[in-house]
Length: 603
Ligand SMILES: Cc1cc2nc3c(=O)[nH]c(=O)nc-3n(C[C@H](O)[C@H](O)[C@H](O)COP(=O)(O)OP(=O)(O)OC[C@H]3O[C@@H](n4cnc5c(N)ncnc54)[C@H](O)[C@@H]3O)c2cc1C
Image (tube, rainbow, N blue to C red; front, side):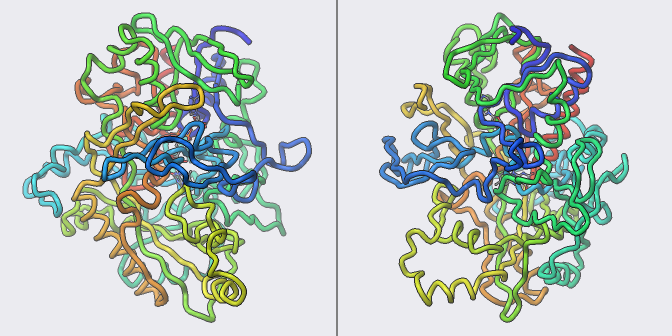
């Protein structure tokens, strides 16, 4: 292995892979260091058998007990093969009462491809308005519910460039990643044209959603999903062949053994894997960066056998998924308090780790009435989406600061396995509980439960901007250490009162869609994520090192370069100053393609 590269990229997910793809193809020497393993789809595996299992969150192996000195000490858990073991390297989440829980929340996936291996693939663009929320909320006469102290207006930030700057990169991402969907009725300009593959026929259960949206006058479109439905020339992947069912219905939280799901491995990295100037090292954990003045001089990592190694790059890209990127930068600052620390912390302006964001999300779910029951195996996870709640008029009328996409999920209760997985779970840490501890669900009761729920679940979700709050932040935990003796990430996060108002309104809209769509059984709605329970981070790990034009108010410049350094860029979701009214991954990818263009002219 050589010691010096044009580019060292840390993390192979949505933020890292587009840059590797572009710059390796331009002949630059690129080293990619990835903490997780390389798991191949079956068409690439020499055995013809993929290393992915049907449900990555269900573990094999013995039950373990949490040993760490935290509030949930003693909790039983299982670890999965794509997430860190809870005792080895947890995230610590501070509860409302000030005590700490150890959790795997906020890890997307530790594997080549990162979160894009397990994601649901919902690949929406942000709207132009999502990028100009300061402008919008400072208009004359703006009024918001749940914001008595006028904090939201002051907290809102515009992105340092308009939607038009990102648009060609959205199109590039849609082309190279491989996404199916529909442009018509989206409230975003598609100036560079329609790059989608054709959607599959929708699942008949989604008729309820379509009918509900129509009844409410909500223009809708087929949800863009990062799953190929046809041959995909840029990555050389074959789509489902005639007579072959895509069988990709179980996209969300599953690694796809067939490679139809467009993870960054199959779409962006696999096409460059044989280039002599590209090296991918899986199972390598970067421990810290060291600097020489304004340059990152060395990237320190542990080789797969645990041996400490180091390497240098003319440019270094950090893309570890926001929480772990912030942690890596803070760990590096801890090790070098006179050199690295003042530069990354910008002489103590308190911005690194601050304004951590996820999304406001929630919705409504229900069962369709008996005797309806649907085979959900032949469609993808989401069929219809609407940008109705993105319209300025909607925001003004509802007195909310920002818009949201609304889409349905068909995969709920698709399989007995999925039912088991969710039953009784409060969050990702307990998702494995399933029927294990449900002693009441035996014999006829189990039959009745399956009969009641199987093939009948339908849910509608909204994904909305969360108000950026400085005290929502990532720190290094003062006492809990990982298995290598390094402080773990400490997540301190709450929702603003306006977030709560917004989530209540939007979950009401989701409920209305179900009701008007003729769904009547077991309708529940609300902001799914209350304090201290359920999925606290929503898998959307954003902010913490936001970009901007004012260095006192940001960590990165508009090119995603750390203000205090010449050759350090951070390109996972942590650059976002606002979290957007849609799932974030396509925007992370588009932004990385944008940064790749900037780097191509600089290196
Ligand atoms: C179940 C699930 C469903 C989701 N569904 C959707 C969806 O439908 N739509 C959507 O837009 N988003 C979805 N997401 C979120 C999506 O996965 C993330 O937004 C996206 O992957 C983030 O990109 P990233 O580059 O920030 O991080 P990632 O893609 O997670 O990549 C980070 C990589 O860095 C590696 N890494 C971390 N630390 C180190 C280190 N110290 N050294 C070396 N490597 C390191 C990690 O192992 C990982 O591979 C989902 C996520 C999950 C888990």
